[in-house]
Image (tube, rainbow, N blue to C red; front, side):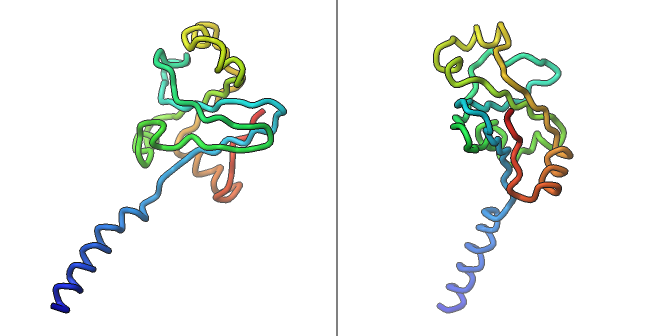
Length: 136
């Protein structure tokens, strides 16, 4: 019985090791006095916002929030190994009041960032694990 219990515990612990695999996120720090939205997508070589509205993290003034791997529909950022992620910053009022196709058509983006995996790693090393992309 003890042997079975040890075997079961070993299997559970070894299969649970994936919980310790690295998950990625991209933190945005809002240093402006306005509330913003941060959206992320793999869009290159296109440079416009995607036709389908993105999930955009709300970031209050003086606060930070993240664009996570599951928001990009890319768990553990596997595509991030070979592609760039584009982060769009959009004004909260625009996001709430202007239709997505109009935001896209007139490129109503305050700022955009393009990051590849190397950029991400360099920023992490330079600014520690708690680094953030600053806006503005």
